Image 1 (cartoon, rainbow, N blue to C red):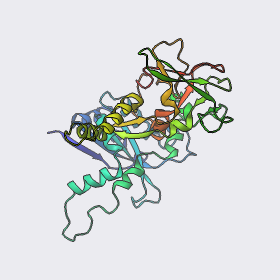
Image 2 (cartoon, rainbow, N blue to C red):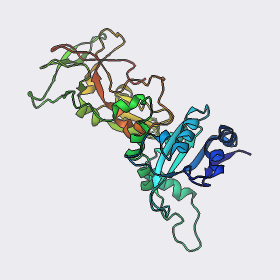
Image 3 (spheres, one colour):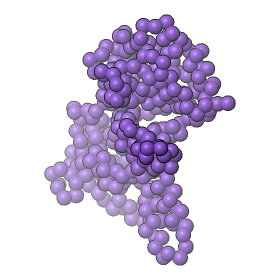
Image 4 (tube, rainbow, N blue to C red):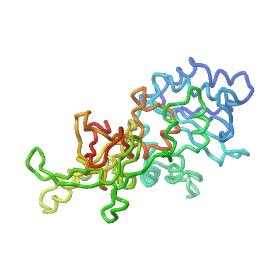
Length: 348
C-alpha cells in the first residue's frame, strides 16, 4: 500500500545524533520514502531552526546536513517541487522550518490555492469535535497563504550557494535601467506612440512605436501596465466556458468576447503545474507579435533558466514568480520611432 503523505519529524537536521545522518543524508533512505509514496504523494520534513539573513553559506555552517539533504532531494528524479515554510507556533524559542516535497507538479496548484479554496476544503473534509470547538487551532486558508512566499532569509542563504544560482541575479528590478511607460494622458511621461495600420487580413490593428526616446537593452517596457495584469485560474476559465454554452440566456456575447480576449492576451504562469493565467489589460496588449527573430526586440525580464525549466527548489522563483510572469525588457537597443515587437512564443 502506498502513502499519500509521509511526515518526517524525528529530530532537527542540525542535531548531533548518529541517526541524523541516516534520516537526512542517506540517499537510499530518502529513495525508500519515495517508493512508499503514491504518484502524487507528499513528503513533509521538519528541517530545524529557521535561517537568518546573516547565516553563512548553508553547506559551511551548522545547517550543512540540512543543505546536503536539500540537494539530494533537488537532484532526485522523482522530485517535482519543493516548498519551504516557517511556523512560529511550535513551542520553541525560534521559528521552526518545514519542507514540503512533492512527487507531482499538481502539488503546486494545491500549495498556491487561494484562502477561500482552502477554507472550503477544510469545511468539506474536517470532522466535527465532541466539544464543538474548531479542530484546527492554528491553520486556515489565510495561514496557508502566509506559507506560500518563503521568508527572505531562505532566498538570501540559497543565493550564497556556489556557483550562485542563475535566478539570483533577478532579485529585484535593476535600478540602473530605465522604465518606459505607456501613458495616454501625459506626453512627457509617455514613451510610446500607437499607430493604426492595416493588418494582413485587411482589418485595422494597432502598432506600438518607441516615440520619444531611444530604449536601451535591458530597459523595462510598460512595467506599470504589466503589473496591472489580472489573474484568472483554470477553474474560473472552465466555469466561463461552461456558462458560454448555456443556451437561451441571450447574454453570452460578453462572456465569449472575454474568453476570446483572454485567449489572445493571456498566458499561463511559467511555473509548471500552476493553474494561474495572467491577462494583459494595459497598453502592452497592443504590441505586435512576430515569429521573425530579426524584428523582435523585447522579451521576458528573466530569460528561460539554462536548464530549460524552473528548478524544483528555488526560494527566488517562489518569492518573485509574479514579477517573472509579467515583466518585459528590451532585448536590444531600440531606436526612437522603431516599432516594438514581441515574439509569438514569448511565454512558451
